[in-house]
Amino acid sequence: MNDPFGIHLSLKNLGIHSTNLGSSTGLTWLDSGASYFSSDSPADGQLIAQVQGASEDTYEAIISQASVAFEKWRLVPAPHRGEIVREIGNSLREVKADLGKLVSYEMGKSYQEGLGEVQEMIDICDFAVGLSRQLYGLTMHSERPGHRMYEQWHPLGIVGIISAFNFPVAVWSWNAALAWVCGDVCIWKPSEKAPLSGIACQYIVAKIFAKHGFPEGVSNLIIGDYRIGELISHDSRVPLVSATGSTRMGKLVGKAVGERLGRSLLELGGNNAIIITEHADLDMAIRGALFGAVGTAGQRCTTTRRLIIQANVYEEVKSRLATAYSKLVIGNPLDEKNHVGPLIDQDAVKNYLIAIERVKAEGGKAVVEGGVLAGSGFESGCYVKPAIYEAENHFEIVQHETFAPILYLIKYENLQEAIALQNGVPQGLSSAIMTTNMREAEAFLSVAGSDCGIANVNIGTSGAEIGGAFGGEKETGGGRESGSDSWKAYMRRQTNTINYSSQLPLAQGIKFDI
Image (cartoon, rainbow, N blue to C red):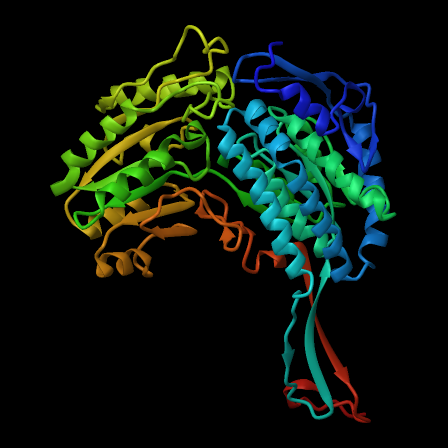
């Protein structure tokens, strides 16, 4: 293939060669004998590599190796585990440009967004290093004399991570970095639509573990489709499954894990809205809405899909957005002059076109018409026009998440109505309000305000920092990853009572004398 952006060199720098394209436990790459997946770039339609999928035998080999590794890894003091994660973060700093380029080329997001995704990995490693000295429990006063109580946290074991194509590396790192400092080992199934980014990360990480003499199996990669996800979800040897993807997928994972009384951490669909009030700084509101709606070509779970606009500023917002959309430059994501790259594949394009047909059929009116781009530079067939439609919140298509750059404009009169519209969808991930009015902002953040896991004031719905817990409510799944106290999901709590007296009193004053 033509290589104007140096992707071949980046692959070489990341250690990706034809001899190691598949599943692995540590630095051991496994030949499963199974069929191959094609990694095709949506940027130009070119085949990047063939990646071998895993068989059930491969899965069993990786699970066995991970189980053995956990027995040793859990005994390493948490601060020492943190030092390993520190080195992983430093290694990511060294390859940030190359890994960001691979993410951009394989997935289709802009190079700047690819770099930002790698920076998220670096940031969560830094967070996890500090966390390794802060896995705090509580001490409690006992009602019984000569007793003390406390709680402590122990690692769970094997953490299964199922990640989506739109963030092919960052969301894995949110889970893995925390799981490692908590004493867990990880098995990662990246999206089969972006497997090379996962292979690159596994190679980077496994070298660090091997350098320090830790057993293979602390970090594991398994390539495959939904069938590998099913194996992980049904496996009682995997006490926690963290899955990112569609609500449909999450329901299947949650059911499978729940039936064996395991734990699931689900990060599923979003249908995110920005409320723009008549007191908003409209320059700020337009910028926030623009990136929120078209960033990653609308393929973020936090993408802005609905703008709920106060009637007095509705026409001005609509006009200014249309003007802003006319200035967007669409093209190869590695060219930094371009704002918007391609959708991930032809299936995504079909879903985009179906959504446009449906919103029109339900009565929606085009503000900026959508469509598929063709011609020079668009040979992959995955480039589409970011589109805007006036709609009603109750439209069936508006109630669903379409993973594409389609923005719906909805008019409102008063803030109570706006909040009801914002909350009036099955999903509950991210939300925002644009206002300079303190009362409006506080009402939006109150118990009667946004029902989402993320609620922002005067910023958009996307672009979460790693310091806060990330996740949502309702059909978004209820999981929390990344910052705050999300680490508790990767550990088991144990309450301890110690009697240092010479008596054996019972709690609640119960007498049981013989």
